[in-house]
Length: 114
Length: 112
Image (cartoon, rainbow over all chains, first blue to last red; front, side, top):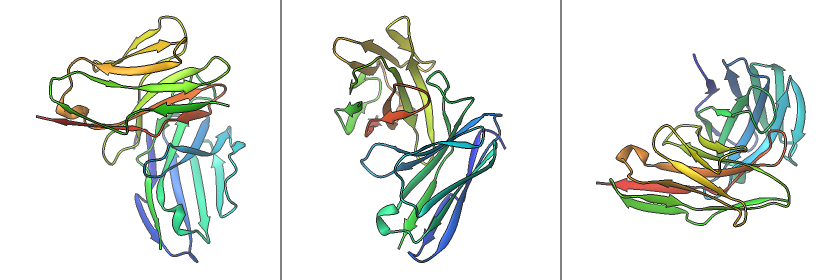
């Protein structure tokens, strides 16, 4: 595997379910990000981790819970979601945080909440 | 505060014709500027970026963008598009550390 991978690619869940999204980067980067991409809206930054420490929590509801066990893996734990949470969730990584560092994106997980 | 405006949500263009995608931003401080491209069913890929120096930046596949500080713009252009350029294009600005702020995107549809 190369680059940034995300699993699953598609997920359908009910509002009472608990599920997790997984992201793995094979680039040796120190920073990882979660974004939410909704139709016709700008990408929304949700969380940022640098060296496994959360450095940004962008006013995200508590039903989204991130976890970064090491610099290569990032999870997004989901529980009690709402239909408006349906979106494409993108993971990204960069060598370090900072504007000079290109962010590399995974293909995303398409989430549908029923 | 800063915001990014992409003025066109969709741009249809014929193959081998030129295309321009407009991006304006608002910020009271210096920013770094990026264009990302998203092909169908894929994540975003960096197309080009402006950090400092020459205001005209180019990508390896023929796109270019010009930073215009007075007009707070960073428009993307390509003189001759291919079918394979069909994708969604996102303008983004970064004021500090890694916090990118994206525009809503412009869908480019290239037809023969």
